[in-house]
Length: 413
Image (spheres, rainbow, N blue to C red):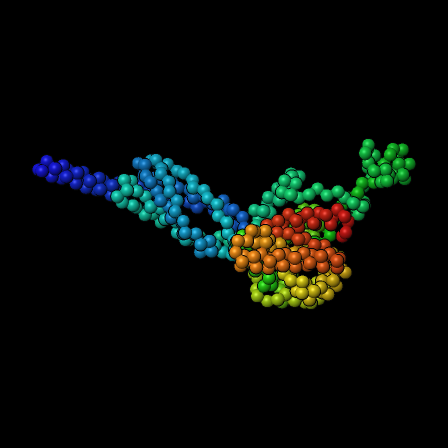
Protein backbone atom coordinates (compact mmCIF):
# COMPACT_ATOMS: atom_id res chain seq x y z
CA UNK A 1 0.00 0.00 0.00
CA UNK A 2 2.86 2.32 0.88
CA UNK A 3 4.45 1.48 -2.50
CA UNK A 4 1.31 2.58 -4.37
CA UNK A 5 1.23 5.82 -2.40
CA UNK A 6 4.86 6.50 -3.36
CA UNK A 7 4.11 5.84 -7.05
CA UNK A 8 1.08 8.14 -6.93
CA UNK A 9 3.17 10.84 -5.25
CA UNK A 10 5.88 10.57 -7.91
CA UNK A 11 3.27 10.73 -10.70
CA UNK A 12 1.72 13.78 -9.08
CA UNK A 13 5.02 15.67 -8.92
CA UNK A 14 5.90 14.66 -12.47
CA UNK A 15 2.50 15.90 -13.65
CA UNK A 16 2.98 19.13 -11.73
CA UNK A 17 6.46 19.56 -13.21
CA UNK A 18 5.11 19.06 -16.74
CA UNK A 19 2.30 21.49 -15.96
CA UNK A 20 4.74 24.16 -14.79
CA UNK A 21 7.06 23.49 -17.72
CA UNK A 22 4.13 23.76 -20.17
CA UNK A 23 3.12 27.08 -18.63
CA UNK A 24 6.65 28.50 -18.67
CA UNK A 25 7.51 27.59 -22.26
CA UNK A 26 4.18 28.98 -23.52
CA UNK A 27 4.07 32.27 -21.65
CA UNK A 28 7.75 33.20 -21.23
CA UNK A 29 10.39 34.27 -23.70
CA UNK A 30 9.85 35.70 -27.15
CA UNK A 31 7.67 32.87 -28.44
CA UNK A 32 4.61 34.05 -30.32
CA UNK A 33 2.38 33.32 -33.32
CA UNK A 34 1.51 35.80 -36.04
CA UNK A 35 -1.30 35.44 -38.56
CA UNK A 36 -1.62 37.54 -41.71
CA UNK A 37 -4.77 37.67 -43.81
CA UNK A 38 -4.07 37.33 -47.52
CA UNK A 39 -7.53 38.30 -48.71
CA UNK A 40 -8.55 40.00 -51.98
CA UNK A 41 -9.18 43.73 -51.89
CA UNK A 42 -12.79 43.09 -52.88
CA UNK A 43 -15.00 40.02 -52.95
CA UNK A 44 -16.81 38.64 -55.99
CA UNK A 45 -20.50 38.04 -55.43
CA UNK A 46 -21.75 34.53 -56.15
CA UNK A 47 -18.24 33.13 -56.78
CA UNK A 48 -15.84 31.01 -54.76
CA UNK A 49 -13.32 33.57 -53.54
CA UNK A 50 -9.86 32.17 -52.63
CA UNK A 51 -8.85 33.21 -49.09
CA UNK A 52 -5.55 32.55 -47.35
CA UNK A 53 -4.21 32.83 -43.81
CA UNK A 54 -0.44 32.95 -43.35
CA UNK A 55 0.66 31.51 -39.97
CA UNK A 56 4.17 32.18 -38.62
CA UNK A 57 5.40 30.42 -35.46
CA UNK A 58 8.25 32.01 -33.49
CA UNK A 59 8.36 29.26 -30.87
CA UNK A 60 11.57 27.19 -30.57
CA UNK A 61 9.53 23.97 -30.31
CA UNK A 62 6.65 22.28 -32.19
CA UNK A 63 3.24 23.69 -31.30
CA UNK A 64 -0.40 22.94 -32.12
CA UNK A 65 -2.35 26.01 -33.22
CA UNK A 66 -6.10 26.52 -33.33
CA UNK A 67 -7.22 29.55 -35.39
CA UNK A 68 -10.60 31.19 -34.86
CA UNK A 69 -11.62 33.54 -37.68
CA UNK A 70 -14.54 35.88 -36.98
CA UNK A 71 -16.44 35.76 -40.29
CA UNK A 72 -18.89 38.47 -41.43
CA UNK A 73 -22.43 38.14 -40.13
CA UNK A 74 -23.83 37.85 -43.69
CA UNK A 75 -22.14 34.47 -44.16
CA UNK A 76 -23.63 32.86 -41.03
CA UNK A 77 -20.64 30.52 -40.75
CA UNK A 78 -20.47 28.53 -37.53
CA UNK A 79 -17.49 26.21 -38.18
CA UNK A 80 -14.91 28.98 -38.11
CA UNK A 81 -12.04 26.91 -36.67
CA UNK A 82 -8.81 25.90 -38.42
CA UNK A 83 -6.17 23.59 -36.99
CA UNK A 84 -2.49 23.18 -37.84
CA UNK A 85 0.72 21.96 -36.24
CA UNK A 86 3.99 23.76 -36.84
CA UNK A 87 7.58 22.86 -36.10
CA UNK A 88 10.00 25.33 -34.55
CA UNK A 89 10.06 28.66 -36.41
CA UNK A 90 7.92 27.25 -39.21
CA UNK A 91 5.40 28.98 -41.46
CA UNK A 92 2.39 27.63 -43.32
CA UNK A 93 -0.70 28.73 -45.24
CA UNK A 94 -4.32 27.81 -44.66
CA UNK A 95 -6.46 28.19 -47.78
CA UNK A 96 -10.22 28.08 -48.02
CA UNK A 97 -12.99 29.25 -50.34
CA UNK A 98 -15.72 31.69 -49.40
CA UNK A 99 -18.88 32.30 -51.45
CA UNK A 100 -20.68 35.56 -50.59
CA UNK A 101 -24.25 35.92 -51.83
CA UNK A 102 -24.93 39.58 -51.02
CA UNK A 103 -23.33 42.74 -52.32
CA UNK A 104 -22.11 45.26 -49.74
CA UNK A 105 -19.53 45.54 -46.98
CA UNK A 106 -18.27 42.35 -45.31
CA UNK A 107 -16.59 42.96 -41.95
CA UNK A 108 -14.19 40.35 -40.60
CA UNK A 109 -13.62 40.57 -36.86
CA UNK A 110 -10.48 39.54 -35.01
CA UNK A 111 -8.41 36.52 -35.92
CA UNK A 112 -7.53 34.58 -32.76
CA UNK A 113 -4.74 32.01 -32.43
CA UNK A 114 -4.78 29.51 -29.54
CA UNK A 115 -1.36 27.87 -29.09
CA UNK A 116 -0.65 24.77 -27.00
CA UNK A 117 2.45 22.66 -26.32
CA UNK A 118 1.33 19.68 -24.26
CA UNK A 119 -2.33 20.62 -24.08
CA UNK A 120 -2.57 21.68 -20.43
CA UNK A 121 -2.60 25.40 -21.26
CA UNK A 122 -3.52 27.47 -24.30
CA UNK A 123 -2.03 30.87 -25.01
CA UNK A 124 -4.18 33.31 -26.96
CA UNK A 125 -2.87 35.75 -29.55
CA UNK A 126 -5.07 38.46 -31.11
CA UNK A 127 -3.29 38.75 -34.40
CA UNK A 128 -5.57 40.84 -36.64
CA UNK A 129 -7.89 43.74 -36.09
CA UNK A 130 -11.30 44.02 -37.74
CA UNK A 131 -11.14 44.49 -41.51
CA UNK A 132 -13.79 45.43 -44.07
CA UNK A 133 -13.98 44.19 -47.65
CA UNK A 134 -16.54 45.33 -50.26
CA UNK A 135 -18.39 42.64 -52.21
CA UNK A 136 -18.83 43.63 -55.86
CA UNK A 137 -20.72 41.98 -58.72
CA UNK A 138 -18.98 38.91 -60.09
CA UNK A 139 -15.63 40.29 -61.32
CA UNK A 140 -14.13 36.76 -61.17
CA UNK A 141 -16.62 35.65 -63.79
CA UNK A 142 -15.86 38.81 -65.76
CA UNK A 143 -12.11 38.11 -65.77
CA UNK A 144 -12.67 34.48 -66.74
CA UNK A 145 -14.74 35.44 -69.80
CA UNK A 146 -12.29 38.18 -70.74
CA UNK A 147 -9.29 35.84 -70.51
CA UNK A 148 -10.91 33.16 -72.64
CA UNK A 149 -12.11 35.78 -75.13
CA UNK A 150 -8.58 37.10 -75.67
CA UNK A 151 -7.28 33.54 -76.15
CA UNK A 152 -10.21 32.62 -78.46
CA UNK A 153 -11.43 29.82 -76.14
CA UNK A 154 -14.94 31.05 -75.28
CA UNK A 155 -16.43 27.82 -76.62
CA UNK A 156 -15.13 26.12 -73.45
CA UNK A 157 -17.73 28.09 -71.48
CA UNK A 158 -20.57 27.42 -73.91
CA UNK A 159 -20.21 30.56 -76.06
CA UNK A 160 -21.22 29.48 -79.55
CA UNK A 161 -19.40 30.23 -82.78
CA UNK A 162 -22.09 31.79 -84.97
CA UNK A 163 -21.85 31.92 -88.74
CA UNK A 164 -22.28 35.40 -90.13
CA UNK A 165 -25.36 35.90 -92.28
CA UNK A 166 -25.68 38.61 -94.92
CA UNK A 167 -23.21 41.47 -95.38
CA UNK A 168 -23.94 43.97 -92.64
CA UNK A 169 -20.30 45.03 -92.67
CA UNK A 170 -18.41 48.32 -92.91
CA UNK A 171 -15.74 48.97 -95.57
CA UNK A 172 -12.21 48.93 -94.15
CA UNK A 173 -9.62 48.91 -96.95
CA UNK A 174 -8.63 47.43 -100.33
CA UNK A 175 -6.10 44.60 -100.42
CA UNK A 176 -4.67 42.12 -102.88
CA UNK A 177 -6.75 39.06 -103.70
CA UNK A 178 -5.78 35.73 -102.12
CA UNK A 179 -7.21 32.33 -102.90
CA UNK A 180 -10.50 31.78 -101.07
CA UNK A 181 -11.70 35.40 -101.04
CA UNK A 182 -15.32 36.02 -101.99
CA UNK A 183 -15.40 37.07 -105.64
CA UNK A 184 -18.41 39.28 -104.90
CA UNK A 185 -16.05 41.62 -103.02
CA UNK A 186 -13.78 42.17 -106.04
CA UNK A 187 -12.84 45.83 -106.64
CA UNK A 188 -12.57 46.03 -110.42
CA UNK A 189 -11.53 49.68 -110.52
CA UNK A 190 -8.56 49.07 -108.23
CA UNK A 191 -7.75 45.90 -110.20
CA UNK A 192 -7.60 47.89 -113.46
CA UNK A 193 -5.30 50.51 -111.93
CA UNK A 194 -2.66 48.22 -110.42
CA UNK A 195 -3.19 45.30 -112.85
CA UNK A 196 -3.63 42.88 -109.93
CA UNK A 197 -6.74 41.30 -108.55
CA UNK A 198 -7.90 43.48 -105.65
CA UNK A 199 -10.76 42.89 -103.17
CA UNK A 200 -12.57 45.06 -100.65
CA UNK A 201 -11.86 44.21 -97.00
CA UNK A 202 -14.80 44.66 -94.65
CA UNK A 203 -15.09 44.69 -90.88
CA UNK A 204 -17.89 44.38 -88.38
CA UNK A 205 -19.97 47.43 -87.68
CA UNK A 206 -18.73 49.02 -84.48
CA UNK A 207 -19.84 51.56 -81.90
CA UNK A 208 -23.36 50.15 -81.73
CA UNK A 209 -25.12 50.92 -78.41
CA UNK A 210 -25.91 47.91 -76.22
CA UNK A 211 -27.95 48.56 -73.07
CA UNK A 212 -28.80 46.44 -70.04
CA UNK A 213 -32.16 47.38 -68.50
CA UNK A 214 -32.46 45.84 -65.02
CA UNK A 215 -35.76 45.62 -63.18
CA UNK A 216 -35.41 46.36 -59.44
CA UNK A 217 -38.99 45.42 -58.58
CA UNK A 218 -40.44 42.87 -56.23
CA UNK A 219 -40.25 39.92 -58.64
CA UNK A 220 -36.45 40.18 -58.87
CA UNK A 221 -36.04 39.33 -55.16
CA UNK A 222 -36.78 35.65 -55.85
CA UNK A 223 -33.80 33.56 -54.60
CA UNK A 224 -32.03 30.71 -56.37
CA UNK A 225 -28.95 28.99 -54.90
CA UNK A 226 -28.38 31.80 -52.42
CA UNK A 227 -28.51 34.62 -54.99
CA UNK A 228 -31.54 36.67 -56.02
CA UNK A 229 -32.59 37.04 -59.65
CA UNK A 230 -31.30 40.60 -59.42
CA UNK A 231 -27.81 39.32 -58.55
CA UNK A 232 -27.85 36.97 -61.53
CA UNK A 233 -28.98 39.84 -63.76
CA UNK A 234 -26.24 42.12 -62.40
CA UNK A 235 -23.51 39.50 -62.96
CA UNK A 236 -24.75 38.79 -66.49
CA UNK A 237 -25.02 42.47 -67.44
CA UNK A 238 -21.47 43.10 -66.17
CA UNK A 239 -20.04 40.33 -68.38
CA UNK A 240 -22.21 41.42 -71.31
CA UNK A 241 -21.03 45.03 -71.00
CA UNK A 242 -17.41 43.88 -71.01
CA UNK A 243 -18.01 41.66 -74.06
CA UNK A 244 -19.67 44.63 -75.77
CA UNK A 245 -16.63 46.86 -75.24
CA UNK A 246 -14.27 44.08 -76.37
CA UNK A 247 -16.28 43.92 -79.61
CA UNK A 248 -15.77 47.70 -80.02
CA UNK A 249 -19.44 48.45 -79.29
CA UNK A 250 -20.76 50.86 -76.67
CA UNK A 251 -22.13 49.56 -73.37
CA UNK A 252 -24.78 51.29 -71.27
CA UNK A 253 -26.90 50.62 -68.20
CA UNK A 254 -30.34 51.54 -66.90
CA UNK A 255 -32.02 50.36 -63.69
CA UNK A 256 -35.67 51.00 -62.94
CA UNK A 257 -38.62 50.15 -60.74
CA UNK A 258 -41.27 52.77 -60.04
CA UNK A 259 -38.82 55.35 -61.42
CA UNK A 260 -35.56 55.19 -63.34
CA UNK A 261 -32.81 54.89 -60.72
CA UNK A 262 -29.52 54.77 -62.64
CA UNK A 263 -28.77 55.67 -66.24
CA UNK A 264 -25.31 55.39 -67.80
CA UNK A 265 -25.25 56.36 -71.49
CA UNK A 266 -23.66 53.83 -73.83
CA UNK A 267 -19.95 54.51 -74.30
CA UNK A 268 -16.77 52.51 -74.90
CA UNK A 269 -14.32 54.66 -72.96
CA UNK A 270 -11.63 53.19 -70.75
CA UNK A 271 -13.50 54.00 -67.53
CA UNK A 272 -16.90 52.77 -68.72
CA UNK A 273 -16.61 49.36 -67.05
CA UNK A 274 -15.58 51.02 -63.78
CA UNK A 275 -18.66 53.26 -63.90
CA UNK A 276 -20.96 50.32 -64.63
CA UNK A 277 -19.37 48.18 -61.89
CA UNK A 278 -19.69 50.93 -59.28
CA UNK A 279 -23.33 51.54 -60.23
CA UNK A 280 -24.20 47.83 -60.04
CA UNK A 281 -22.47 47.52 -56.66
CA UNK A 282 -24.99 49.92 -55.11
CA UNK A 283 -28.14 48.49 -56.74
CA UNK A 284 -30.80 47.04 -54.43
CA UNK A 285 -34.27 45.65 -54.96
CA UNK A 286 -37.46 47.03 -53.45
CA UNK A 287 -41.06 45.91 -53.09
CA UNK A 288 -42.49 48.29 -55.70
CA UNK A 289 -44.01 47.30 -59.02
CA UNK A 290 -42.02 48.53 -62.05
CA UNK A 291 -43.56 51.36 -64.09
CA UNK A 292 -42.96 50.49 -67.74
CA UNK A 293 -44.73 53.65 -68.86
CA UNK A 294 -42.07 55.80 -67.17
CA UNK A 295 -39.37 53.49 -68.51
CA UNK A 296 -40.59 54.00 -72.07
CA UNK A 297 -40.79 57.79 -71.64
CA UNK A 298 -37.29 57.99 -70.18
CA UNK A 299 -35.74 55.70 -72.80
CA UNK A 300 -37.51 57.57 -75.61
CA UNK A 301 -36.10 60.88 -74.34
CA UNK A 302 -32.53 59.79 -73.56
CA UNK A 303 -31.72 57.01 -76.07
CA UNK A 304 -31.87 58.53 -79.53
CA UNK A 305 -29.98 55.93 -81.58
CA UNK A 306 -31.36 52.48 -82.40
CA UNK A 307 -29.98 50.17 -79.72
CA UNK A 308 -29.92 46.58 -78.59
CA UNK A 309 -31.59 46.41 -75.17
CA UNK A 310 -31.42 43.42 -72.83
CA UNK A 311 -34.38 43.65 -70.44
CA UNK A 312 -33.67 41.71 -67.24
CA UNK A 313 -37.05 41.25 -65.60
CA UNK A 314 -39.28 38.44 -64.39
CA UNK A 315 -42.83 37.94 -65.64
CA UNK A 316 -44.48 35.19 -63.60
CA UNK A 317 -47.98 35.39 -65.13
CA UNK A 318 -49.35 36.08 -68.58
CA UNK A 319 -51.55 38.87 -67.21
CA UNK A 320 -48.53 40.72 -65.79
CA UNK A 321 -46.90 40.60 -69.24
CA UNK A 322 -50.01 41.79 -71.08
CA UNK A 323 -50.33 44.80 -68.77
CA UNK A 324 -46.91 45.99 -69.96
CA UNK A 325 -47.06 44.76 -73.56
CA UNK A 326 -48.10 48.11 -75.06
CA UNK A 327 -45.10 49.93 -73.57
CA UNK A 328 -42.69 47.17 -74.57
CA UNK A 329 -44.09 47.13 -78.12
CA UNK A 330 -43.62 50.89 -78.48
CA UNK A 331 -40.05 50.54 -77.25
CA UNK A 332 -39.48 47.65 -79.66
CA UNK A 333 -40.38 49.84 -82.64
CA UNK A 334 -37.31 52.00 -82.11
CA UNK A 335 -34.92 49.40 -80.68
CA UNK A 336 -34.30 45.68 -80.52
CA UNK A 337 -35.58 44.34 -77.20
CA UNK A 338 -34.31 41.07 -75.78
CA UNK A 339 -36.57 40.00 -72.91
CA UNK A 340 -35.15 37.61 -70.34
CA UNK A 341 -37.62 35.08 -68.92
CA UNK A 342 -36.29 33.09 -65.95
CA UNK A 343 -36.98 29.40 -65.54
CA UNK A 344 -38.16 28.50 -62.07
CA UNK A 345 -35.75 25.62 -61.54
CA UNK A 346 -37.24 24.54 -58.22
CA UNK A 347 -40.74 24.39 -59.68
CA UNK A 348 -39.47 22.33 -62.63
CA UNK A 349 -37.76 19.90 -60.26
CA UNK A 350 -40.99 19.60 -58.30
CA UNK A 351 -42.95 18.86 -61.49
CA UNK A 352 -40.50 16.07 -62.42
CA UNK A 353 -40.52 14.44 -58.97
CA UNK A 354 -42.42 11.23 -58.22
CA UNK A 355 -45.29 12.05 -55.83
CA UNK A 356 -46.00 9.63 -52.98
CA UNK A 357 -48.77 11.45 -51.12
CA UNK A 358 -51.95 13.19 -52.15
CA UNK A 359 -50.62 16.64 -51.21
CA UNK A 360 -47.55 16.00 -53.39
CA UNK A 361 -49.81 15.25 -56.36
CA UNK A 362 -51.58 18.60 -55.87
CA UNK A 363 -48.22 20.39 -55.60
CA UNK A 364 -47.00 18.74 -58.79
CA UNK A 365 -50.13 19.80 -60.71
CA UNK A 366 -49.69 23.40 -59.54
CA UNK A 367 -46.01 23.29 -60.56
CA UNK A 368 -46.95 22.06 -64.04
CA UNK A 369 -49.44 24.92 -64.31
CA UNK A 370 -46.70 27.46 -63.53
CA UNK A 371 -44.37 25.89 -66.11
CA UNK A 372 -47.12 25.99 -68.75
CA UNK A 373 -47.76 29.66 -67.96
CA UNK A 374 -44.05 30.44 -68.45
CA UNK A 375 -44.19 28.76 -71.86
CA UNK A 376 -47.22 30.89 -72.78
CA UNK A 377 -45.27 34.01 -71.76
CA UNK A 378 -42.38 33.06 -74.06
CA UNK A 379 -44.77 32.35 -76.95
CA UNK A 380 -46.55 35.67 -76.41
CA UNK A 381 -43.27 37.56 -76.53
CA UNK A 382 -42.12 35.81 -79.71
CA UNK A 383 -45.52 36.37 -81.34
CA UNK A 384 -45.19 40.11 -80.68
CA UNK A 385 -41.76 40.27 -82.30
CA UNK A 386 -39.45 40.24 -79.25
CA UNK A 387 -36.14 38.44 -79.02
CA UNK A 388 -36.42 36.15 -75.98
CA UNK A 389 -34.06 34.28 -73.68
CA UNK A 390 -35.74 31.57 -71.61
CA UNK A 391 -33.05 30.42 -69.23
CA UNK A 392 -32.23 29.05 -65.82
CA UNK A 393 -30.62 31.74 -63.60
CA UNK A 394 -27.22 30.03 -63.51
CA UNK A 395 -27.04 29.98 -67.35
CA UNK A 396 -28.07 33.60 -67.80
CA UNK A 397 -24.58 34.99 -68.47
CA UNK A 398 -23.71 32.48 -71.22
CA UNK A 399 -27.11 32.80 -72.89
CA UNK A 400 -26.97 36.61 -72.83
CA UNK A 401 -23.55 36.71 -74.52
CA UNK A 402 -24.66 34.11 -77.08
CA UNK A 403 -27.77 36.15 -77.92
CA UNK A 404 -25.68 39.31 -78.33
CA UNK A 405 -23.26 37.52 -80.70
CA UNK A 406 -26.17 36.02 -82.62
CA UNK A 407 -27.85 39.38 -83.17
CA UNK A 408 -24.52 40.91 -84.22
CA UNK A 409 -23.92 38.08 -86.70
CA UNK A 410 -27.37 38.44 -88.20
CA UNK A 411 -26.86 42.17 -88.68
CA UNK A 412 -30.07 43.13 -86.91
CA UNK A 413 -28.52 46.30 -85.41
